[in-house]
Amino acid sequence: MLKPGYVLIILPILIGGLGLAVEHLGSFYDLKNYVNGRTIPSALVHSGKGGKELRLLEYGTLTGVQLQDFANDLQPTATPSSQILEARARDSGLPSLSIIAGAEELLDPQSGILVNFLQRGRSWERAAYVSYFQDGELRFSSGVGLRVHGGKSREMPRKSLRLHFRELYGVPSVSSDVLFDGKALPLRSVVVHSDLRERPSGVKWHFMNPLAYELARAIGCIAPRTQPVALYLNGDYQGLYILTEHLSPEYFQARLGHSNFVMARTKRDTEQLPATVEMGDPRLYRAFRDWAADGNVDIAELSQRVDLENLTNWMISILFAGVTDPFQGPIILDTSDPNAKWYWVNWDMDHAFMDVYDQAPEPWDIDIFAGPLQSKRDPRSAIFDRLTRESPEYRAYFLNRITEVLNHILTDDFLNERLAYYEGVSRIFGLDDTRFLSLLGEYLQNRSMVLRTQLDTYFSSGPSFKLTTSISGEADLKIDGYRVADEYRGHYFFETPVSIEISTVDDPAFTSWIINGQISSIDTPYLTLNLAEDTHIEVVLLPESHPAQ
Image (cartoon, rainbow, N blue to C red; front, side, top):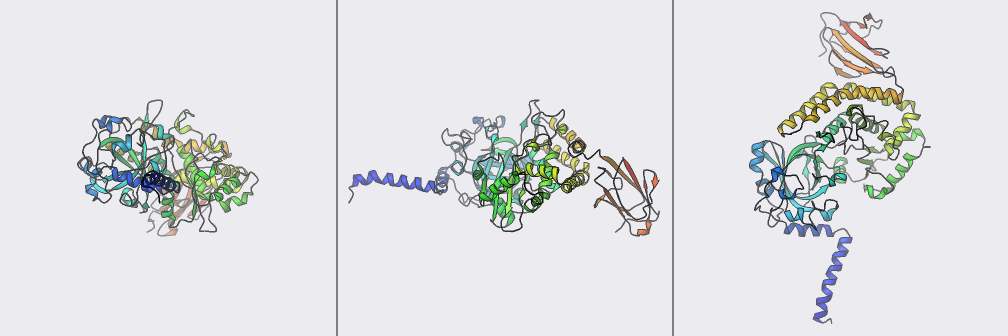
């Protein structure tokens, strides 16, 4: 039998060894965060002073915050993050996100996550409280795991944060329709992005990611939803931030309805491949990446292994938004489907619209074809290059698709509406520098024509020609399958034909087409044309004709 003295010596060693073993097995993080959670504070005593004048990492805004006994079963209105902000959020009417964490958890030199902002992983997650207010009402509140988020942005003064919902802290997930518009999905984590990039010119840019994601979704891409919020950290206002769906493995599990998929993050895609694969068999992505880089791959195989519609839409979104670091975002393969194809998801488009590296006379003139798309390290670029050089069918498809997007999806009306929305957001959040809005407006106005000129350079498409229409009567007008206003304006290359269809209650009401002042011999209410010059088409109807019901 061991003597008592030996027990006192050996027991701590055994306990320490057990702790190291558990940590090595990956389970220690839960225990550690639970212990941290129990020592992190619940009833708010007081918040730091001077926060309105300070930024996120100017520590005076956070010192002095003390809480007691973290609790994961508080009612939403009873959490410190709700209590400290309830009146201010209600009075301001702004969508507001309030986060409360102990100052030690944020600022301790050894363990504080804001001080040690380059540290990653579950061991650098701290228990906190979060509340979300919209229209002056509390929409959600719970305990949450708090981390610093991002790549290079970790070194910027204004940090981005990530919120993890876990049973440990109170709830395992939050429904996405509570925080964002659209389809409800259970979210296990969300990101609170710093929404500010100041250019050397001194102009402060906002809303790059949200607007680029909206344009991408309109085109047909998969992209996260966002919500501008007023961020309060320990009661102190940090400014305008962007609440964003986090594209984690759990996000795609909820989206697909199962966990049989491969997910790899493609940012900085290098030979260190296994570290980029977060879900599924990394060998599948390694084999796909090597295959895509093989210049001898049968061109017909590409359409069998890659979702080319997805790739094309992704390319168009990057080209239109002028993203100078495009090769980011998850790549997914649904392994539950034997015929599944690899596809990509838009993410981190914060270089959009502003020509970060000053490569063009004006931001809207930037040439993404000649820049990022020349890199062949990413499968997207390698595959797109092969297809556009070696497949006349794909080249024609791409030209038709980008023509469709520029004429019917990213229309002046749509872009002006989005610009007006962000002008309104800028006003209600009281942004002090809104010079970026005029630059953004010029970008959205000019980018389509710049792209058409670049397509002639890289695709030998020839110039684009303007098409306008008018109708001498009332009818439903469809162009390229889209219902449009009577006075339509679009642009077409010679090899991207336009199709026009007129619909009335009484088809004989159609009389004729007048094309550039000449009556056409085509006597049907539909036609297809290849434009070789700027063209005006007038639709002539009988006076008594009426639109189709």
